[in-house]
Every structure is written in structure tokens, then in C-alpha cells.
Length: 141
Image 1 (cartoon, rainbow, N blue to C red):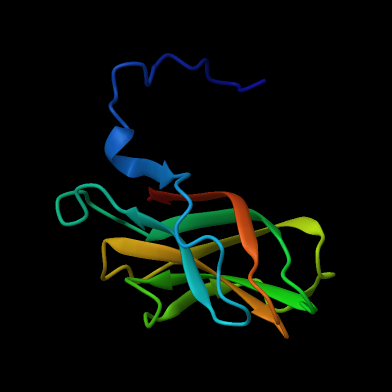
Image 2: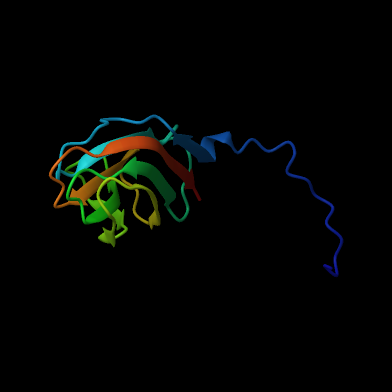
């Protein structure tokens, strides 16, 4: 219990410019072993909202691993498939034909772009991997 009573409320503060996300699946199925964009978000009012410490990013995906797949790597990149990697899950062991889910959480301390992408790459994938669901969200602080 705080020693000083809380007397202020955040009810009237509009925080909507600070949070956003997308659950739209892009590019499913993804081709064999190629790293592929599976979700994209645009940070609303990127240039107009003050960012003190950066952008927090969270990505999640559920997918059925393609034939011969042995590992999955989920990444969040700046701008597009060629952008700098903000965070990577590293190669996590998966089994072909299984439905699995993966997540990745990171922060961009030097946000210079208003667009982030979630990518998936299946190591040794011989056939396509099907994306069931995704979510890529952001909050700036």
C-alpha cells in the first residue's frame, strides 16, 4: 500500500497514438527455406509522437512447418525484408508437418523508421510452410 494516496487518474489521457498492431497474415504459404515477411505494422503518427526511449515490438506466429523443416527463426526488421534486424528468436527446433507457435519480443532504441515487419524462415524447408495466424504489435515510450 502506497504511503501517499493516489489522487490522479489517467482516464482522460489519450494513449492511442502510443499503441498499435496488426493480425493480418501476409504471404502464406511461405516458400520453402526463404525468409519471408508474414506481417507488417506502421507506427501511427511516427514523426509527430514524441519517443523518449524507443519502440517496443512484439511478434507472434502460428504455422504448420513445411516438409523437412528442422528449425524456425522469427525476426522483427525495420522497414522491409532487407531492413536491419531489431530482434531475432534464433533458430528454434521444429518438426516438419507440426503446427507450432513462436514469439519474439524486442525494442528499437533508435527508431528511425515508421514501419516494422515480422519475418519467418524455416531451416531445411523443402516444401511450403503455412501461416495460420500472426500478430505484430508496437508501443512507443
